[in-house]
Length: 375
Image (cartoon, rainbow, N blue to C red; front, side):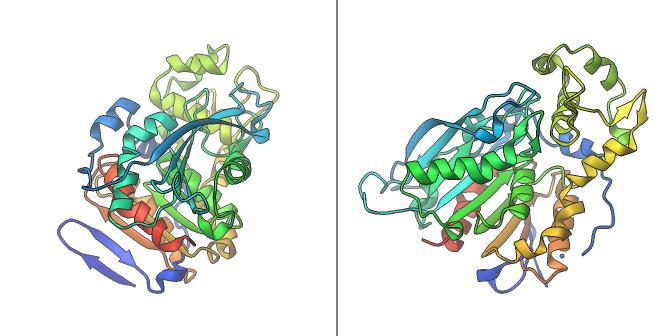
């Protein structure tokens, strides 16, 4: 392994870029999720902090379609979240002209507390997509699904409380896009990327569903390890006990809503209305059985089970800002995957959790998929 260092970035790259692969067994599973939640800003703050790349001269306009996709995997969820999900599709400039042409697709997953529409403002699409194409990235379709729930985020997990968002992304959405657009319907021509909670989703889904995707990019992934019980809000039980429905959580503080989103995804309980979940604390005492469920959903705990899947990817990349509290866990994932001899690129760039996400999307994410997806 070689380190490339200068005053602004820290990158690690392992050879054989056509088969980049995910390095070191995990030493610590318990890391304060406060780091994750504290570094995931509220939607307006995130959008204000995002730097916009300058428009690229000569960039051709992409076409943006806002559609709704029904997911059988989300039907009947106990939380009452919609099974019909808003999806934003960005079609490349040549799509309406070259009617016989088929395109690779990237699926881009948004973070906690925002939906697909707010995600477009964070990464400034379609401008950044158009800019990437104008700078030489091979054209592709970009798909941004909305996975916001009653507690502000699905965690892209499988739960009777929220619905099976893992299957929505990896099966139902892909099936719809392949049947309604001119895609190259092959895993080698599909990419998966996500930021923050979306980075967790891309990690989780990427580990489990290499049969559906050919390249993987993780942007500041959250929740790779389990929250330290000592970081739970002291009044969480009292405030959640007063809720009469999941929708009532909208009045609660950011941190408690985040804990509820995780509990709905990772410790669901169909026999515990009205929220249909189990909190990891009860009477101010930690519940080891519930924490075990959370740990079972932590990629740093289960990644070793999917090494064979990771070997199938043409390329894997991850990045994180040098001022982002998620930096340490992202590097642990890089090291864990690399310990199996699976090459994967990793970069620490100058920035916070959200400040450079639009630049990264245009100048790193899009070119990455342009290089490694099959056209």
